[in-house]
Image (tube, rainbow, N blue to C red):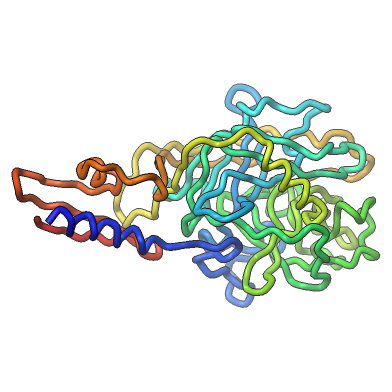
Length: 389
């Protein structure tokens, strides 16, 4: 009977859902179906929860209970069912030529509605190490940074990395791409508490007035204005669908206002930095252990252990800008409290009780008989089964 039990457990593990970079489990909400969601980001709309599972929120502790916040994205080099790397903008950290200690940085993964206390997919993870690429505060060149998390984030329907292009890959000029974030919904306006998206086109570089170095930055949006990223979206991803996967070509960097005519937003050119990112990922201090965002709880189930409302933070300083204001991040967030240790790839213990504990099985063992329950998740939905032995 013990062999049957162990076999059942191993069989359930073999059906653990696998995830590919740039392929969300949740379908993206397209413009044709979102009339009631307009006026999000700038000219955008509310995203379907977890349809941008690579999206994260990067918090920098300033002083007291004040935080500067930006967007970011989960990325990954190589195979595996977890990642500990976050891509974001360097200007999110820079302030008067100084950069904060890594202990000041926290990354929020698996979030959609920052005020939803039942959103158990949210998880906060401390940063282990980070590096930027010689960011130039005068020209905004090299506005890119890489964070190594203290713990790797397990892949789930709410946490999937974006794919990266190859080094020096050509931009898909004229292709409709997407930017996501919790930033301002209009120039100088309020930020949003739910994740938003906007469709943008990569603009031909000859039409981009604000780009100073076409080798490391590009424009996206529209020269007609009306659609753009804005304050609070800094560091977030610009992704384009290529061969059925979303590939990150840009990092939100700066702009002249938000969604102005003739001034589309400016993005760090990710294809120019892929080799640098690959090398830096090898030398950043390593992570230890894993975390896993909780699955969405059934309606009416209290999740507990959650606090909301970090106060709206101080904006990371834009540094010295010639005449082009940056888009530093701002708003606050809610953080989850669930954790995960070991990962599904951990070595199975020899003791059966430890095995049951590892897979979250509650037993009623008594002598040679008893009961146990197995909870599995299929497409994010819990399925509970009871067994006797």
